[in-house]
Image (cartoon, rainbow, N blue to C red; front, top):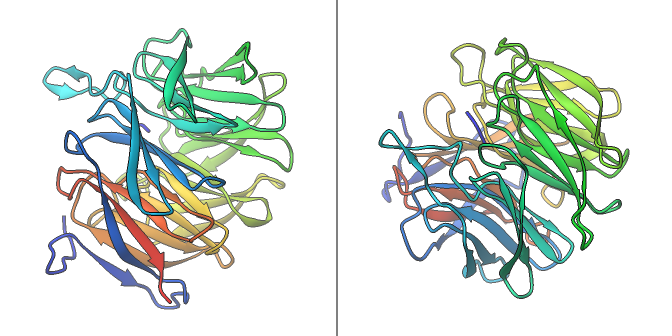
Amino acid sequence: MRRSHAWLLSSGLLAAVGLSGASAAELKQVGAIAVPGEKLANFDISFVDQAHQLMYFSDRSNKSIDIFDLTKDMFSDRVPGFVGVVMKNGKANNDTSGPDGVVLADKEVWAGDGDSTIKIIDAAARTITATISTGGTSRLDEMAYDPKDKVFIGVNNADDPPFVSLYSTEPDHKLIGKVKFDDATDGAEQPQYNPVDGMFYMSIPELKKDARKGAVAVIDPKTATLVKMLPVDDCHPAGLAFGPDQNFVLGCDADGKEMPAVITIMNATTGKVVAVVPGVGAADMVDYNAKNGQYYTASRNNPGGPVLGVIDAKTNKLVQMVHLTGGNPHSVASSETTGKVYLAVGANGGDGTIHVYAPAE
């Protein structure tokens, strides 16, 4: 995705802080999964295959999609073949590095790379079987999958203007169409499939160079057309995850400077904002766990230092913040089987592992 006063334990890594009214399912750290190979300094998105309890993780430091077995909370395997960290003027260039987004489409893992390609991985063989160019000049980033119509959507967020490509996941991998977003002046972010109305919902951080004006684009997978734009102000949305009652949470990238650090929750049926959650913000990836009834925010730029935010999805209230010392924690996912939450913490300011949290007994 685009765009320290730290609370310490004796370990020097983190402390979990509960807020007033915290639910009984307060998270506690129960472990950390080591990542072999090069130290985990640069990474992107994670995705959990709930049926098989496997997590796919975009590990740029090792130029691979890493696979973690969530039944044992351990590293399982990795699929190499990605561009890794691409340097520009002595710094990592986020726009051309990869892997980036990752999603499971039936028996294949589709992953975006920094050279504007999709790498298709056989989930059983764990090898790349096809490469598709989206025709852009920079990375293919966030993505989602429509299992009903067998349609994949991928976002070229760093191209100008940003655009999405929709492909059939049938063996022909036919291009269904593309949608450009000429008014999106700070990229395009996370799409998610909504099985209730059969549409993709996608975060648009900024419109017409006004950082306070963003939107959620609604896209028809079958026709590759933009259906409508749902406006959202003072959020600069990045991550997006569906929760209960057709609500979805937006990982607002607002960091308390140009606009307050908050998390926004909207409703797909009405298109309206149902809650603005203060006290936590500056998030990238967000997640919803139905077993725990909670939203999670990977708030890497939260004022006062990075945190894992926990929001009760029934009341839309912030119930907990887990404070970290650094490590660019912007990738979060969870298991619907165990209720465990997985937060990647990089080696720059953190310990370079996948932190594992579980609801307290």
